[in-house]
Amino acid sequence: MKKKIFRKISQADIDHEKDQTELGRKTASAFAFVAIAQVVANIVVIVGTIILARLLGPENFGLMAMIATVATFLMIFENFGLYYVTVQRKNLSIEELNCLFWVNLAIAAIIGLLFFLLAPFIAMYYKEPILKDLCQALSMAFFFRGAANQHTAFLNRKMNHKKTSIATMFGAICGTVFALILAFMGAGVWSLVWRQVIDAFSRSVMVWILSGWIPSWHKWSSEYIPALKVGGNLTFSRVMYYISQNFADILIGRHLGAISLGFYKLGFQVIFLPVQRVTEPISHVMIPMLSQMLDQPELYRKSYLRGVHIMYLLYAALGIFVVVHAPLIIDVVFGHEWIGALVPMRYMAATMLVVGINSTSSWIFVTQDRSSEMLKWSGFQTMAVVLSILIGIQYGINGTAFAFMICAFAVSPILYIVIGRKGPVKTSDFIWMIVSHLPLILSFVTVQYVTMLFYQGYDPLLQILFAAMAGMSYAALAFVFPPSRTLILYLLYEIKHKILKKDKKEIMP
Image (cartoon, rainbow, N blue to C red; front, top):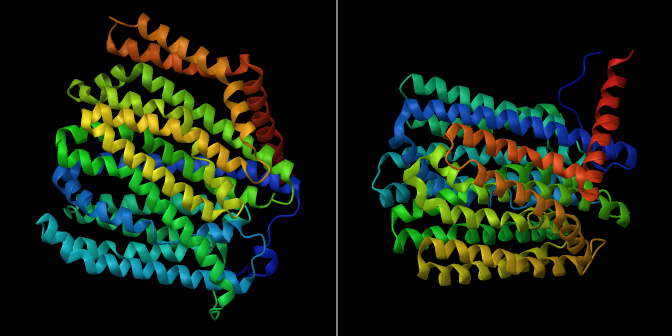
């Protein structure tokens, strides 16, 4: 009998996984699929962007950047935090899931309509009439993303990241290929707009097909109001984060000029764009997994701390590498004319020593249903960042970046205290993690600094080779020290016994 693509979902399809062995296998598998999807999608996007940049030129990309300023801010509101509501809820009925879909779609449609109506004003502000039509076409992407949000949450709730990863790759490929065809046909900036629309549409269609769920209409009930409250807290927390990440741009652009802003922004993007690329997909695995462990505090604590240890070690290594080798990175990759970004880049990279830990705080706040605390913390952190930048900008972009770094280190202990007040994860866990990996971090710093002194005067290509070899020494050093060695051996065990073992069973008759 032919299997139907779409079907009615049952309560069993929504309920969290009860079997912890199965949950462990699904978690390991989820990390693998998410990693593959991110690599493939990023390669497609980067290669496509390089080709489009050559075909379209800076003017068309500049027009798209004008639109992105407003679109990126409005995207914060398009799912209203309801993705995490669906993923995190321990008890979620079919009726509530269906209702959340329609609410989510309605919010996304309203945001898209708002962007559509703002189009003439955006065009007027930038004095580019074509922006009106571009914005109105791009507004469709909000609706398509809203249509896919709850289906993605539905799949990820059950740790079925394989299907959502396929949808992500499918969307990236379709959007990029369609944009390249349009660019070769002479569509200009429209290629960039339709790239985003087709990406959102393709991913939405694929995630509907892979989930097999067609939402049914369900009447709104007042019992769903708490879900909207949680979603609102999460959304406005993201608004606070957006402000803290972009406030410096506004002040620097106005008071120090475009060149200074370019230097500052380069240092910021080199560090924080990779962080966002890594943190978001990992969060999509960790949050549903931790949500299913709330009734097992010790398992929750161990699973969370393993994830944080990994994030801390990865980001610390990246930060140290950039701090030491920043002059080489700027000179070889970007060109000597970008040397003004050196100091801001180093200060930004230094914050990676705490960003790796701090970026996981949302795992705690979301899974433990502490969204109101998350909103309060975001407000406090944003005020601290704004105050620091207001002081630092008096001393130029270097002072601004330095103030941002000091603020990051200053608020981190407060965050660990806030997290440790409730739940199985305590403040002492963060202290022990930092202390236990200190020998590895100091050893890596020493290796990078000695290498940097050694390669001075050599050809740039040889300098890159020496720096790369020094960077790879991190893996060898990690095996020397027990805390990091134990973590690596655990990860290798998980891959061998929970992914490869499953594949073997599926292949055998």
